[in-house]
Image 1 (cartoon, helix red, strand yellow):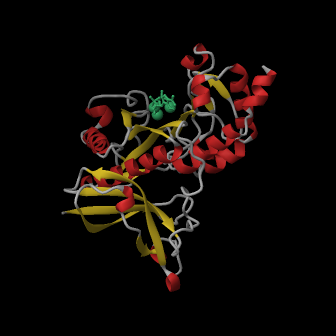
Image 2 (cartoon, rainbow, N blue to C red):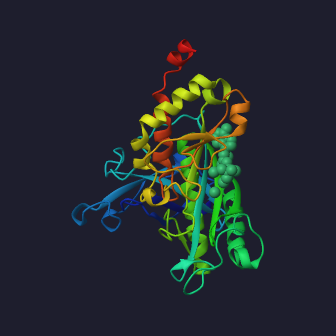
Image 3 (cartoon, rainbow, N blue to C red):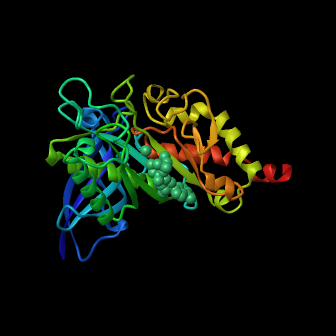
Length: 345
Ligand code: ADP
Ligand code: MN
Ligand code: MN
Ligand code: MN
């Protein structure tokens, strides 16, 4: 038998942005356990905005697990928060009831800032560094400093070793700003991995005395980019059948559902989606081929391939909840009738 360190990880009840929480229990197994072998566990919900002190028990239900490369015999256990009965989802549980489809593929581009001493890493104590320009995909100390890349590389290795489908990294437009991409098949699979990658980044940077700022516009109304979490998506139908008529019907439905999308695309998005800094205004839907100033960017390859492939919704922000984002995308897609579109074509 081996003693495994199980880190049960969950989202707390803070709004509008939940925090990641985690605690460890040691359990013995003959070999690396399956999800079904992991027991339910509990925590004090009165300390996480999830219960009153009088009746404080909440239940943790394991829903995904990953080897924890930073710990000997460690396992990262993504959990949903349940009511004391163990079966009713807690109201803060944004995962339990979302739409899912394993043939729907999601690629999230998570942007964020490194922060130290209350300002972006590399910013001087007062004022600003040289303006944006050389930082995006930049190299060299004056562009990326001396520690950011080390963290980013370590994070990449941790994600890969945990079996997270990490797809790449790049330095972003603002100084101290970076991005990683995660791809998953199915909304839960993709979103679980984003939350776990966020967890690993937050935990990794503790030892550097550096924070991760996920706010979408930490530098406010200045000439510094905000942070997004672009959502690239495709369904089986989009990849295999597609077509211009279906695409146009889909875009009409996205337009109609504008406010439903904005509602779950992360807080303070009006401060980021201004129409400047490669964004579209938050209150007007648009799409365009290769247009980084549109709500949805249509890749060249999509048009060349008879309107088949994936689309990029550029509006979700860096603090958005990937469970809710993916689910809303699937909801809008589900409202477009394939039969009606093909009959009209
Ligand atoms: P950019 O910065 O140019 O917008 P990235 O390379 O950062 O693009 O991100 C593109 C994302 O698109 C990746 O996360 C990738 O996984 C995702 N992607 C590629 N093909 C598909 C597809 N068929 N369905 C969904 N997502 C996809
Ligand atoms: Mn990108
Ligand atoms: Mn980016
Ligand atoms: Mn993008």
